[in-house]
Length: 118
Length: 108
Image (cartoon, rainbow over all chains, first blue to last red; front, side, top):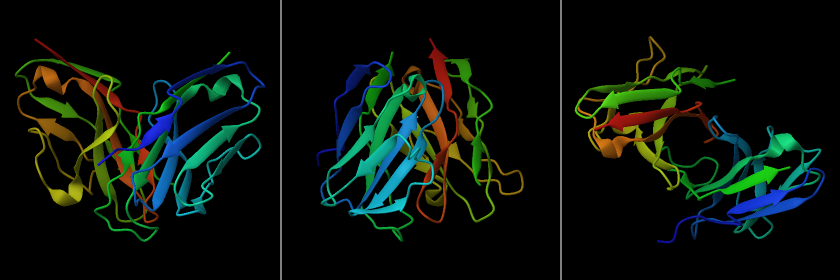
């Protein structure tokens, strides 16, 4: 079974530029998550999708961050414009179930995209 | 809001020594706790969960609701255990809150 795929793996941009990250979850997984992991910290959830709908985006800085999962499969996360403090690893994860998913659902993580904002 | 605290950023032990990685949490509901591990150059992966009450790679963790803790233990550390370990709490909406992580270094 192929794992969660993310691209690009690394991205360097200057502040005020825009950037987009892509995630392809494990086939058939209904729920998709985006996390931000700042150096020295644990992952922090940004947004959760179930199929093509947003379940929770309470921690997403909506003035500059946006995410979509139009067809309920792949997802993109965009930052526009980027700030220095956005430098982090952006992780995508997926689980098989929906919002009321099984308590045994495991989140499977992608390799992450490391963003450096100069 | 829930919170997960891992008080040690770094834990260094010699091979064969016992290991305990601490995790404390705060949550108003019934908690579901996990330990995730990230080995060098690998992706974050689940190590174990409290509801399974299993031992994985010699690691165990017991949920102590009275002390709101979920410490990870192994009686004899191996060099291949060196990694970043994250404690996480899942809420009713299936969302994970992670602790800050502990880097375990096992010296030969």
